[in-house]
Image (cartoon, rainbow, N blue to C red):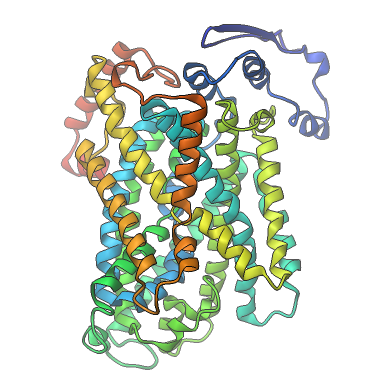
Length: 580
C-alpha cells in the first residue's frame, strides 16, 4: 500500500494542492502498469488547472510551469556524453561533405568547418552554462523568453519545432533511399513504414528509450569515423591495395581551392548545417538525473568531437578524394552513399566490402536523426504548450514522464514521408526543407544572445560568477564571437542564394534557401503585436524558476570545496578535468 501522496505546487500567484489516488488503484500486472503509465501525470494535472485559470500570457506563470514540468529525469552521464560526441555526426559529415569538397576544395573544407566548429564550441558552452543553472523544459525557447523577449521565445520555439517536424518525414525517406545502394527490390513505402514504426516505438519507451538508442547509434558512428581515420592514414601513406603513396597530391592537382571566395562561403553554409543537432544536449538537460554533474562533462566533449571527428576525418578526405571527382557530382539525393567521399575514398583504394559497411553507417546516421527529430520536436511542442504558446492538449504528460500527445502529433507528421510515392515528391519536400533551412542558425544565435543577457542580469541582480555551478570556458566573449559568426553564416547564405557560384539567380531557389527568415520574423511580429510583449530588462529577469539548487550559500561552499580539491590534485588530473 502506498501512502497518500500530497503535493503542493506554487505556480505564479496560484497555490494548488492535489492528492494522488490511493494504492487500491495501482495495477498489479506488468500490462496493467504499462497501461497505467499512459494516464496523466499528477503534476501535469496541476499545471493544466493553472493553464485553464490563467487569463492571457503571463511570463512568470509560464516560467513556473516549464520549471516544474513532470518530464522523466532518466538520462545518465553515458547517454549525454555519447549524444554530445556523436549526436550531430550524420549525413552532413558522411555525404554532404562531398558536395562541400566539390564546391570549395579541400582547403576551404577545413577552413569553413574549423570556423563553424569554433562557433559551435562557443554556443555549446553558453548553452551548457544556462542548462546547468536552469535545466528546464523547452531549453532554447525558454531562455529566449526569459532573457530576451517572450515574442522571440515564441518564434524560437516554433522555429525549432518546425525544424524537427519537417525533418522527420524527410529522414524516413532518406533512410529508404540508402537501401537503394544494394539495389533492394522492395517499394520504398514498405521501408518507410518499417522505419516509422521503429522510431515511434523507441520514443514511446520514453526518454530512456531515446537515450539508449542514441547511445548505440552514436557509438556505431564514432567507431566508424575512428576506423575510417586509421584506414585513411594508411591509404595516404601508400598502404592500400592500389594507388600507392598519395600524400598531398590532390592539394596541388586539381588544387586546394575551387570557385574562390564564393566557394568558401558555400562550404561555410554547408558546414553550419552539418553541425545541426549539437544543441540537443541542452534540450535533454530537463530529463537528466543530475545536470550539474553530467552536463559540464558532456559539453566539454564537443571540443573533441569537432577536432577528431570532423577536422581530422575531413582533412583525410581532402587528401584522398580530389574535388573534381565525378562521383561527387553524381549524387541522386543527400544520402546517396555513392557520392559520399568516405565511400569514394575506400573504393578508389580498391577495398571491397567496406563501402557497404559505410552505407550501413549512413543508414544508422539517418535513423539517428529521425529519432532525434521525434524527441526534439515533442519536447519543444510540450514546453510551448506549457507556456500557452501552443494548443493546450500538447502539454499532456503521462505518468511515464512522456509528452505523449506531442509524440503522437510529431509521429503523425512523419506519415508525410509516404508522399515519396507521388510524382510531386521532390517539389513538396524541397519546400518543407526550406521551412527549416536556417533553423539551427537562429537557435544558436539565440543561445548566445540569451547567455550574454543572462550574465548581465546575473551581475545586475547582485550575483557573482562563483555561484555558477558551471561557467562557459570562452565566457561572454565567446558568446559575442558565436553570435557574430552565426550572423556571418546568415549573410553568406543570403549571398550564395542571390548569386550562386554555378548558374544564375533564381527566385524559387532563393526562397527555398531563405524561407526560414520571413517565417521566423512573422512569428515574432505577430506575437509581439497580439501580446504586446516587451524586451526583458536584466534587473527583472527571472533567475529563480527552474533552479534545482537555490541555496546559494550551500552551492558556493560545495563549489569552493570542489575547486580546492581540484587545485590539490595532479597536473594530469587538472588537465583532464578542464578538457573532459
